[in-house]
Length: 321
Ligand code: SF4
Ligand code: SF4
Image (cartoon, rainbow, N blue to C red):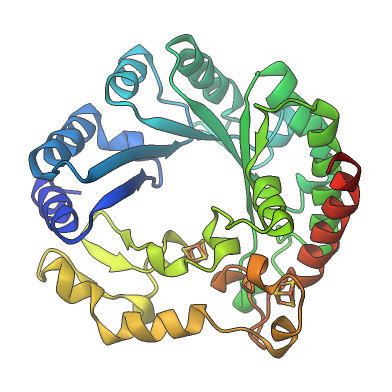
């Protein structure tokens, strides 16, 4: 992203919105943008923010480029870092290769260790595919026990309706089993500072609090995604999808893009509830899942997983409440 588009975006965004604002920098690999880019991010945020803004920057990286200089920059500016790590060495290297077509595990671990050394808050975002989802306990144990990570989240690989036969797609039954094993692992850890993002979101539903993740709280509309060229889409999951292009920051003001009728139509789509949802006891905690994970009928592909996970977690925590 050019500094010109970056400045325009930050300036107009901070003019439009107050309060707690989160900038998530991801790619591709966002660190390829370079140190100067992130120095500019902070400089523009400082230039255009005012007292009512509380800004958090997070970076989602594969971790392979992290060195002392990056760690110091993140530390200085209070960035939170998520490293994409799909499990232990065997599981991570199945699909994550570097330029030399070799597994990137060792480079990612080196990056995590540097962040930990400099006390930069680091979490793991693990992508679940059909090839890794059968190794729940060994991967969680690696993150928590070997690496000492306290904050773990997952991203489900599902290529969507147009490509349901993709062999990497996670199937609902596999995800249900994975979630139950994750709950068991989380309870066995029995540590208040050990957080699994998805469990926290299921738990919020059970105890009647609002979940933090858009896939649970129905706030898909709180996000938008700015591509490197200034094009704006609803979310990185739809980045590059022409029918969901809301506008181009290099040629239009942000406010005009955000008021594009196409965006308002998209809001309607995201808030759709299938008739089964209307009668479901979990509707206020599930909201029919992420819009990108719904089938042709408009219902979450992982509906049964969600119902069974809510039920399983409720049965497990009953004895603690
Ligand atoms: S498309 Fe899904 S992941 Fe993206 S903002 Fe909406 S609910 Fe969240
Ligand atoms: S669990 Fe299923 S039926 Fe219930 S709200 Fe979620 S998607 Fe709808």
